[in-house]
Length: 245
Image (cartoon, rainbow, N blue to C red; front, side, top):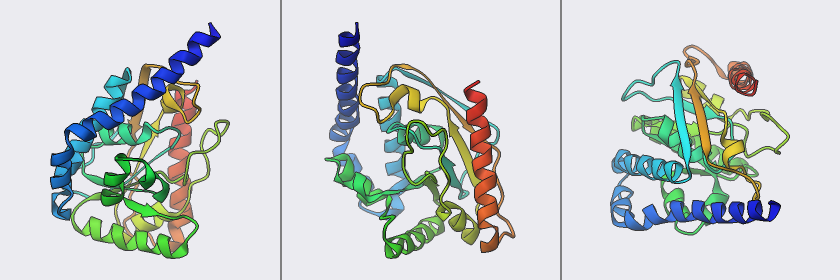
């Protein structure tokens, strides 16, 4: 029985990468056109949402999105969520219709094919470099002026499997305060169980997400960064504890 499980998990992992790759190959000409101008990013975002839905459905994930508040069209937000799985990117794209740009680690740009588009559409950061972190603020500022939103996983990486929710880095909250845009916390309940970074794990099943009430930043200053960080983390942590009951 254990042998069969390991065979299933191996095939399941391979199937995931097939699902990631096939739509990119099929849509490659359209994707190239969509990234040729920054102003065409919303079109790329629509293609990315199709790609994400294709993967989640193909993996047998029955996703459901609960919304306490719905983002308004043509408004900018700072979307944040807990980070436990490679599928977090896909679920975020499915959950949010407002075009947003990911701020993500530069290492993902090395992934064949996926990395080609990742490094041309996302804001890459080297967390060990102060210069790189400063560049993130400048690129994010330009994207926000274009009417887009920003998405950051504020744990700064995927925590150890035993950690329910790691401490949040301040970057997302400083950006939100600087640009006076609301924080939109999301909680992903099942991604770790469905498809974590542990190779021999995962299965089809439910994948729940919740968009919480927005946390305003109007009138806040840099001195409020830590308080905003802690309040946002409490929202996500409380929901994770509710999901896990």
